[in-house]
Image 1 (tube, one colour):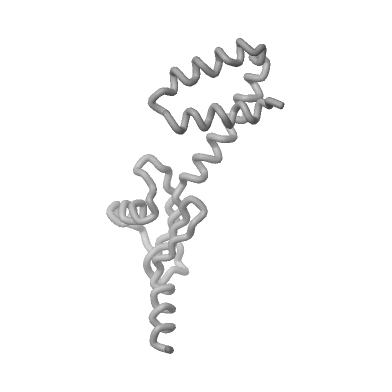
Image 2: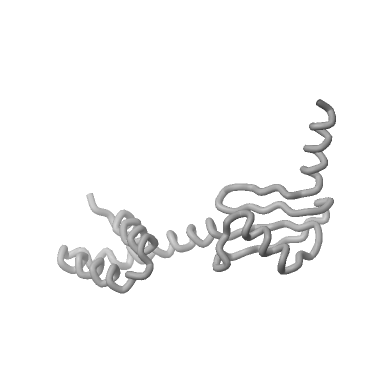
Length: 128
């Protein structure tokens, strides 16, 4: 059975795969809904699209904790390291418990560039 959630997911997949054709995709999508007497689903499809947009934004947000106030070059270096685009949102935090360096989270991965982790790695290699 075709649901408003599935319609929204299909539409979202098409839009994100080919953003340069957003106008054409939208027109075809709306026409398909009208042709199949499904226009009444538009409000629900819209709500699902909002949810998908929020999830995408959250997934693309880089959260970075620094031991100090970071410079612009430090921020860009972390953004490049994690693979975030310049358009992706970034949240900066200062964490007094970090001895130095940073810890970043992006797309469900954690990147630990902290001094503590480096020291623990060095300690482990010396103990062998």
